[in-house]
Image 1 (cartoon, rainbow, N blue to C red):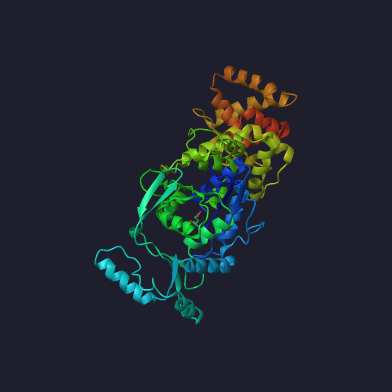
Image 2 (image 1 turned 90 degrees about the horizontal axis):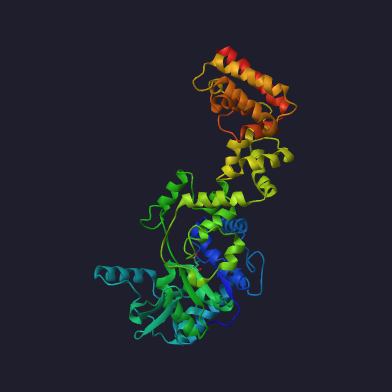
Length: 494
Ligand code: GLU
């Protein structure tokens, strides 16, 4: 066991949109840090200038904030190990790359990209694995320094031992031994002066005193190289955990860009920003994500606090997880039901405002218990409850006609209902429902026929929250007015 206080990090490259894989790579180290009262760090790995996207960092930070994955150190909050953006740490990598050269574990390489490309093509033709051919491996150190100082283009490569092997350990998969002869003299420092991931991440994890590296399994093949670098420097090794891959919803094959696009067409998305816009709440999203690679029972409903309390890195699983959007819906609906009324009201209010509706807060609080159970995503509130905030409803005439009745008969039923309602002191479920049920009986009709007419009359739609509770919120005066309007419409049809 590493006796140092736990320090974990999320180290995304700001190259594109933030998807649930990124979110999970942030969540697990966050949970480990919180569970152990350790520190969680955000580090921006922006050394790949070709793939850099200027909007990605902000989207990343926004997504983390939205999910509630808060970091203790990072580019926008600072900390003792900064800067936390790798392009601002150039000088550090330069120094460490040359340090490795001095230690005899790396070498400057002056080979031209053209020549290397030719070598690569030749190797491919001969069915060999493409790799560096060793031209600069044994360059004299002083000559290397002099040529680099004179402005000649160079990279720095790791000097991989030709013999022997290296044993590395992934916490979930156990130890694994690799022959050094299978490893390349990988580039550590590029000709633009920026480091590759291999150097930058190892240097930063060391300087930032990271105890657990939790990252995507695409880095597992690089682990032997990383272990070589760390050992060459004589540094303490962090624990490595490589997370499982995500499979597409069918469970067959890795999630690709194409499937991601298809999901969006179906009203789903793997991108955190889209998921938020689709009306999902962070509690539901986190519950969904956390179970994709964590060996706790699949149906467990967990709040962030539960996750922190129960998190155990040894329970992460290396087996692939299929993306299942039905589960996201399930967890989202479940967590919506767990929200306090005021909290849910505050979260759905913007949806009404965006529709240009004027929202009465007291009324909204009364509506919440009527719709809470029906919401899968927050925007479902519009279908069920937007009509509450409209001055007038506009029922479709055909919807007012009850099943198996004519328009004239429906008008007659509505008229009888109107008389009963008008005579009541007020309309509440307790006061209005019993006489209305009696009416249903007296008319020898089904409740759906009678209540259906009233529902469409009062709410303007065929599906609504419970009728009498809705009527109470709408108020007697408006209920009567809308019923009169409905009778007129029905009479005209007849
Ligand atoms: N920048 C790397 C990536 O986005 C980070 C991997 C790591 O966590 O070390 O894949």
